[in-house]
Image (tube, rainbow, N blue to C red):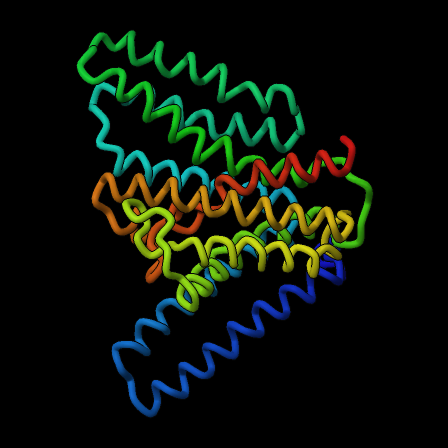
Amino acid sequence: MTIAGHSIPEEILWILAVIFGVLLSCSAIIYLLRQRRDTSLLKEIHLRVWSWWRIAIGVAVVIAGPPWMGALLIAYISFVAMREMFSIGQLRGADRAGIFAAYLAIPVQYFLAWHFYFEQFLYFIPMAMFIVIPVLLVLNGRMNQIGRSMSIIPAILMLTAYMPSHMVLLYRLPVQPHPAGAGGLLIFLIMLTAFNDVFQFTWGKLLGKHKILPYVSPNKTWEGFVGGILTTSCLGMILSFLTPLLWWQACITGFVVGLTGFLGDSIISAIKRDLRLKDTDDLIPGHGGAMDRLDSILITAPFYFYLIKYFAGI
């Protein structure tokens, strides 16, 4: 299918049809139930479903829209996530120059990713910005808690810009052509990451008895962790048609996405627990902020990219 000169693979259309079909069905059911009895629970579910509509539309743009549009949307989400983290980071007024430099790094990082300047992409933030930001903080002349700021600002830059920018590299990755194209690579990552959270939650509720990180996420269990990873590995095999991966490669990729998704969620959960926050923001009603939705994919995206790169022999 071609829209405005942009060809959308049939596999992507089928995936989008299923996603929006499920959302449409949920919306219709909730509407009918609210006509009979409009409870507070139904209002909450209605709010969450509408938030999922917004998320689904964003995903559709990333995987089915023109690549430049998807890249811009991912960059914008990076900006929103960075803004959330700086708003809760309790930084000093003297850190404005370092914070401003971090914001300026976003367009540079995504420019490098879009043009697949791979070596420059790798070194710009971890090397160049990790020098620039401390220098700017030192030049300010205020040394009180400067070490804390030198740690927090680069860490936020890594989490909100460097990690997710690997998704844009997928648009330009010179892998062996396959029917679903770059959109297939992206929806494979997004679906595995999202469903891994669902699988770990579900298995944890059904079988969970042994807590894995009681001081970080009391609801997470070893049973949910193992069950989620194994189920995500199976889902990877099922969705391998979206990628150039062989079935066993897709299974390994699903396993890695399951593991790293758990780590990403745990990292952000630890930060929020330290700051005594439930959510990083209220951007998405019923779902919190951008970082609350991105927590898993921040870590899965780079691991996934390098696995695809390795399996493709690039």
